[in-house]
View 1 (cartoon, rainbow, N blue to C red):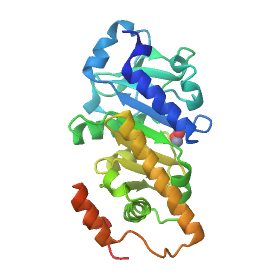
View 2 (cartoon, protein in one colour):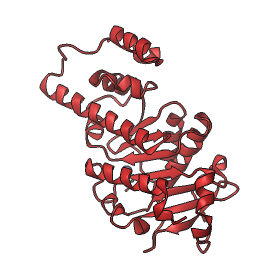
View 3 (tube, rainbow, N blue to C red):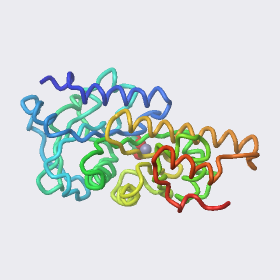
View 4 (cartoon, helix red, strand yellow):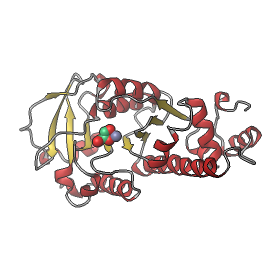
Length: 275
Ligand code: 2HA
Ligand code: ZN
């Protein structure tokens, strides 16, 4: 099957362009990865090249041995993905130890996978295990309002979660396990990948202070929708803080309990503290 015609490549390109249209991908900002199903990997085998040598991932992901990923390229611009996907994206294969990768398709003008490959793969490894193989999409974007919030709220999971939940009614339903927050760290390496994947054990959303956000999900729609909802909630919260920091009214703890009951979600007591 022609790789450009596959449903997962079409979905990936649409999601990347949706993110660009939102203003979350200035310059080469952000990155996206998708873990292929065994059937998808099988369906494109005769379209893959085996010329690229194995290279170290920079971290160890034994839980992903033999998996294939569609990922954005390092230094590539999201705004160009829809125009020239074969130059902007690549499919990588992970070796049988989870230590090395090689490019099997794409990046036709050269380059390498995203600088955040360690974070993407370590998050995928956690999510593959904790979601019983369901999650396949990891998305990193430079979401303006969430970044702004990391300058004005304490960098604590409990505070970010509660404030985002209060700012839009559907938030506790979309991310009942709340959000994790990583303090400012140098991007692109193993250290920030370790901190992020630790929080992905529990959360589907991890915020990087003064940088952006990571979301995990089972489909492109669910993962994009999650990022979009968190970012919109942050926008509302910033507007409220700008106009009237001492909110006149809000969604109360009692309201959250009623919501949880009717929508059949479990909201951790950790976030339902009295203020
Ligand atoms: O430039 O977003 O975090 C890509 C990035 C690095
Ligand atoms: Zn980034």
